[in-house]
Amino acid sequence: MKLCYFNGRGLAETSRLLFAIQGEDYEDFRYPLEVIDFSKHEMVKEEFDKDKADGKLVHSLNKLPYLEVDGVIIPQSKTIERFLARRFNMMGETDVQGAQIDSICECVRDFKDLYQKVRSLPEDEKEKGMVEWFTVTLVEKLSLLENLLGENGFAVGNTLSLADVVLYSFITQFFDNKEASYNATLATPRLKTIVDSVGGKEKVVEWLEKRPKTVF
Ligand SMILES: N[C@@H](CCC(=O)N[C@@H](CS)C(=O)NCC(=O)O)C(=O)O
Image (tube, rainbow, N blue to C red; front, side, top):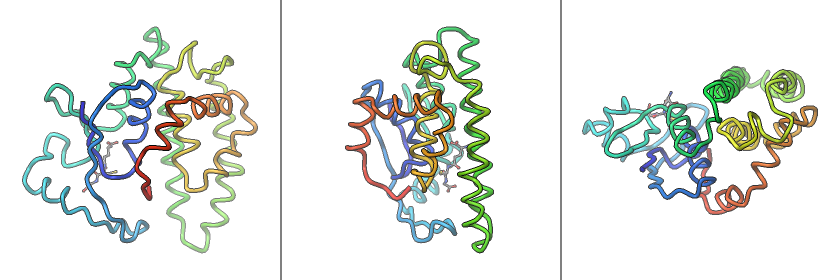
């Protein structure tokens, strides 16, 4: 399989984590990307732009990431994550567990969308907005999410699933202020246990050490 994205963590990193945990070989293709001004989305990505202009990316609607499997192009990061999770037996043991896993991942997606509103606050309101987000809003959201999580160290069922990896990735990889996001889990022991347990996995530690160091 070939996972194609920019040279960043972004929308591809959860899939890369799934590959790392599974110990599965794949091509981790990364278009070069030079960030000029992140806040204004100013970036140089000449090779991507050329392939896009040459019509080479139409099967992913000119967007990244995509996953290539047996010559088939699969776009959309969440679809790729669920596909890999199914392949790696990380979508639960029943269709109901699969739906529970999916729900948790969608909750995380909602939280990320909500956070984008805080990120786009005017500069003079941002600092206050961030404090409020990490100490009140996120803590409240995580407390509600805690009700969906299992008590035995896994989000759903008795084995590691996509939900565990998505939760780990959300708390430890997504935010700029990683200390604040981790601290927001202190009142949610089930979630914290999951985050600590995924982060303690040898294959995850190895991947974090060996992956390219990128700005996002
Ligand atoms: N919903 C899509 C969004 C894909 C997307 O917007 N990707 C961005 C990079 S994060 C992209 O390809 N941007 C290049 C461009 O729009 O020129 C997903 O989750 O995969």
